[in-house]
Every structure is written in structure tokens, then in C-alpha cells.
Image (cartoon, rainbow, N blue to C red; front, top):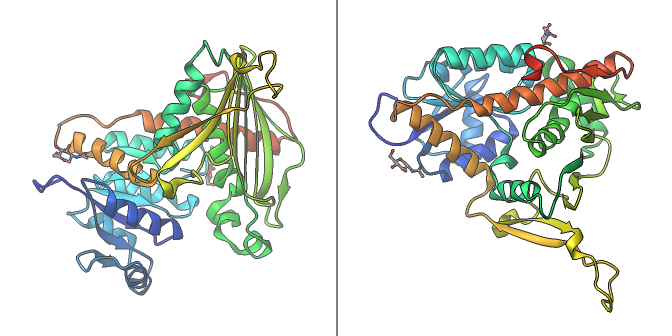
Length: 370
Ligand SMILES: *[C@@H]1O[C@H](CO)[C@@H](O)[C@H](O)[C@H]1NC(C)=O
Ligand SMILES: *[C@@H]1O[C@H](CO)[C@@H](O)[C@H](O)[C@H]1NC(C)=O
């Protein structure tokens, strides 16, 4: 950052639908401001700027390169289709732009490794766009899982993330085009399941992954629906199902030896616009006493307030890290790249298990186990 102001100046490359949310988040986050957007044509970029009421000060470019060449852009948000991530994220890092990259981050681990290596070599911050990680509810739920008195030892995590966008989407949307988003539902919604599972186990990779039979592909061979089980050497187990074919579901359940935690909206709190997110928690200490009408007390609802929407908190956290590098002389925070990479390792393993006819994929050797 050549300027001495205290804001991180964002550019956005690609005017995807999700970019609208990020434009608003950047404008709300302290110390962040949007200065440039780029699309494949200047007409598209101008239309996006007009439709979303972006200030006139935002520079509008007809290419992604121009955003990366703009010396007043400190960081870029990249909502492009997954197949384009490696090219543009690497180029952004090489232009010394910090990278906020939409999920799924890459087509496979070797691509994310190229991205992370470019970020490291150029001293720029990396973060993926998994917004729910930044809601204060997530931290509160972690405290519940860590409370061995009430929750005990984690036994099982299950996540089911689905939505049914309809037949038109399943043949035409970029999320099901092999050359653009070839991971299909596994990359789009399975990413959330896998991230939630890894989050629950403190990002310890499973020792093996086994896809569940019954994967549905579209005519182009892209996954529309699939599931898998993940196994750890100490006996912990996780299962997930992700789909473009079922009614909306954002479910996460974690079972411990003494307690459980569940919620049906972990990706975006239903009550986000009311300023809080909820989850339900129960423990054996809640079992009914004699004389109680209920055989078991209902799970406790925990409401966690949040001053800002989770995407605003994500942009604020990313900006804080960027500032620490640019002004504090610090090093980029590597943990965000580590969790992205682990998520991708599991995505790859699920895909491999499906491709090998539902064979177990071991994840115990090499870089994958770290
Ligand atoms: C914004 O930047 C200023 C100056 O670097 C810093 O003191 C302040 O804490 C930042 N605010 C937030 C919310 O990060
Ligand atoms: C990773 O994905 C890219 C794009 O689909 C492909 O060209 C490459 O061969 C893949 N690499 C591995 C190691 O699978």
C-alpha cells in the first residue's frame, strides 16, 4: 500500500452474483473500500456498477488484468468460476495483491498449492470466502465442542448441505459446467460440509475417506449429488451429503459422548438480519428429573449476537490481516491457507473415491497428513 490512509483498497475481478454481497460487505467493513471492478467487457462491468449503485469513484475495467495492474488496488476479491482461480489468483499474488478467493478455491490440491506458493513468495495474505467461519456463533459453538464436562469427546459429525435450483440450472449454470466448475455440488456445497467437519475436529485431517454409493452426475459428468464418510484413527467418524437435487438444507450435527450440538443454518443464520444466529445444544445433565413432564428437557437454544453480517466480518478480518502486513510490517497469517488446503485435500479424496468406484482413499502419507 503506497498510500498512508488506513483503508485496504479492494478490486473485484469477475462480476458474479456473489460479488454483489461482497460489494456491500466491503462498503460496510471498517478499513475497507472498493476502488475497482473488472469484467470481461467494460459494458458488463459498467452495468454491474450501475445496477448495484457503486460510487462513481470505483474504477470500471473491461478486463481482469487492468484491475491487477491498478497500483491503487491492495487486495482483490476473486469470485470467478473455479477453473479460473489458479490463473488469476497466482497472477494477483505476483502483482502483490492480497487474495480473497471464493470457494471452492481450486480444482484440486496441486492448484491450491500453486496459489498458496505464489501468495507466500510475494508476501500477500490469502483467505477463502467461507463466510460462516467469521460469524461469532462459530466461535461460541467451538467453545461448546471443547467443553469436555458437558460435551465429552467428539464421536460423530454429520453435515447435509443441499438446495434445489431446478432443471435449468442443472444443465446451464456455470456451477455444473465441467470446464468452469467441474467439481459441481461437491465443490459448491460439499465444500461447506467438509469445512464444517474439519472445523469440528480442529482441522485434523481424517486418515481415510470413503464416498457413499449413489453419486448423481449430469450428462457432462459433473457431480449433482454425493456423499462420503471420513474416518479418524481414534474412532471419530464424520458423514456428509451434498446435493443440488434436494430441498434447502444447511445442517450440521456434532455428537459427543455426553452432549450434542446441532443447527440447520450453519452457512447463513436464518436470523442474520435480526442480528443473531442460533444453535441448539444438549447434554446428559439435562435429562429429566422425576416428576418432570417431559422425558427429557428440550435442547438449549443459544442465540449469539453479531453486530455485522458474517461477510462484513470476513472482509474486516481479511483487511485487518492485510493491514498488519502492509503497515505493521508483519507476515501474512498462514492459517487461512492451511484450512483451505485441508478442505481441498478432502474434496480431492472424495472425488478420487467416487472415481475409483467407492474405494477407500487413505490420507496418511505425505503433505496431505500435515
Ligand atoms: C483501522 O485502521 C486503524 C489504523 O491502522 C486502526 O487503528 C484501527 O484499529 C483499524 N480498525 C479496524 C476496525 O480494524
Ligand atoms: C488439477 O486440475 C487441473 C484442472 O482440471 C488439471 O489440469 C490437473 O491435471 C489436475 N492435477 C492433478 C494432480 O490432478
